[in-house]
Image (cartoon, rainbow, N blue to C red; front, side, top):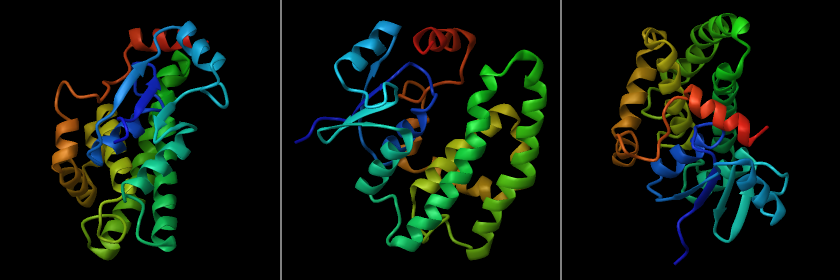
Length: 221
């Protein structure tokens, strides 16, 4: 039997958190080897473990996968979270890319220059309520099903619910006018595997604080 996937990243959400969410939702136990210093990162580079000399990196099924999308695509395919045919996969990809666009704005907010943060936060709120959340609400309304694609849990639902949690950390009121998204969040959050991941003490990472941000800057300088 193959060992558990091993995640190589620093002790923060960053570009690894979506992988943690996806593995957890699939019910897959994983381990983490935290990068705590520039030397830890350099060691991985020197031993040839990082194709492009950067993390995230996941050891799984005898491979050392890098690049977030490649990692997520593999996990979603392996654990049947990627639709039943090419058309469903295209829809899932489209929705996931939309989630990633807004998620990237939120991910980069803590590292924005102080003078730009208010404007960037305002833009995130505007895009959330006028572009991204209405689009996903419309999808759910159009077919009246429990999940975004094929009436079956997919990576699109998992990534979207992860995003909803991040949006609510910024401003809980932003989801108020989107009842179907609220229902999707409740539905996915109540799945046993996700519910476990949302409990205190899990491998889910907290919001980025100043200490973690400084650690990340030192490692990835």
